[in-house]
Length: 465
Image (cartoon, rainbow, N blue to C red; front, side):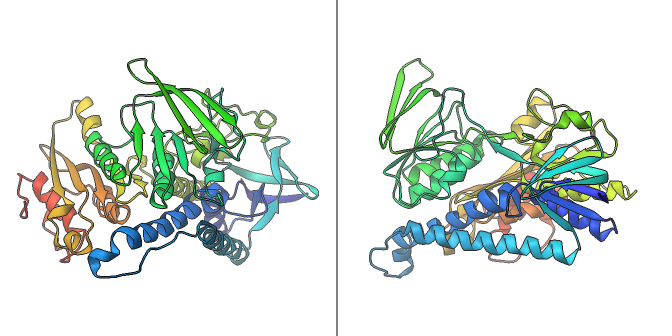
């Protein structure tokens, strides 16, 4: 029986990054993956493939609706969804191959099969052949799976999750999306750009609820321009399929029935921690009422040599959050004292315009009774935005009214997914809004909106509004 310094169960961004860092630190490391391909949900059926389709559909939408304004005549573009899916598959394959290369480079032993505990140091791998290995330390990084509702029968053909939405072979006539969170608005926007009728049914009174309401409203406005229809404050009560037809029965906030008919229903109400088959009880571990593995502030379970990271534990289900925790845990096992601040892990929605945030929002800070100032700046006031035609959106920076320290940033606009990094860096070093405001930002760029919002937060000093 082979013994390792570290055994990692799950090869998503958290698991494979944890394994790499452990190997860099000199640990004999094993990585266990249930499926044939490495990379977990993110690389195979999540972050990477969805962004490939978002980019392809964005190009198509631009060619159809925006090229003419730039003096480019391409006639009437046609969307070839099968070609887009093929390109997406190539992107995924190249990325997964890159992970395999990194495992080989760092001399990490990779096992394919279902990893399950036999005791708190022993893991059985059930694959093409059954193997048993031991780990001085073990990291659970098994990620998450799409959630559903008890009365919805997912057939994975017409009533689908995000996984199947990435493999459709024809553009839906009418896609009904249950859930207006990140996954719902991203995939809804993909198919709306390609010409599908898209309807979103959301139980809450707004979309992407983890962001401030003004950011949510701005995204709602942009998606409505795509032709997406929204049914907010609406509760789904039944989903029925007859042949190729799907009927959604729901109830609005006034109690009136809402009936929608389409050919595809995408269920995107969130994700759940995935521990199926792990046999946690054999290691003396249990899950909480949300199905998550309980950990302390250092990602340790109640067994001090077993850790858990990423979607399978509390906190935002984000690939980069899992990566940070993977590095963090590997360094703790090595006796180091790493740092991670979960408040400074950015959140991004890859619609167009993109949406991003870090820290706490205006509403959350007000609910805490914090004395704050808010500076905002519209993207349409930027020369760069007018030049590109991407004028939708805004940047908002929230600061402590007394110290000017940046407490949060929220933004919606072109390249917000990249712009948010400036706010993350600033907050990591506890910078003030004035610190950002006094730094030179290249002109013309989208990043000038961050500087202007910082100026606005510092005694209302924005220059271009």
